Length: 130
Image (tube, rainbow, N blue to C red; front, side, top):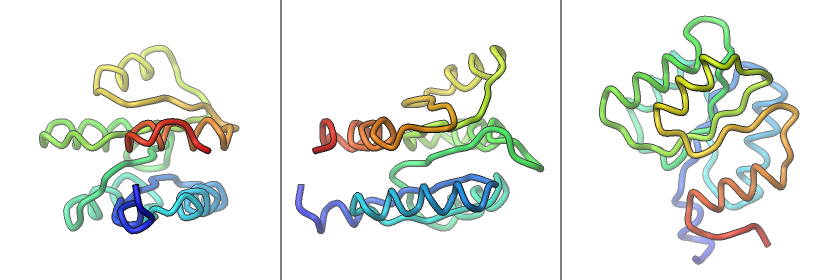
């Protein structure tokens, strides 16, 4: 995959923690992808209604509508955008709910940058990170 092909891929990060969101955006950019961000589920839905996204990194526990609401919205609308869930903690019921909604991976905070990178590369069919 050429660098130009990579940059055409857009990754949306939906995360309420500003510093953590900035770190995720920096990682995505360093991998050569277009990074966009939303501070909550409402803003994430607004972005999804306006532009194409190739992957979403989604926090579950946020003020206002939770990430599960955004994930339900996506799947109910028929969107099969790959989703990697990132959360500090997941109750068993929430974990089962998100797994039923076809997510690519569930990562717990604090995240391993290598694991996140590997999961992103896997979604885009690029194998493991170099």
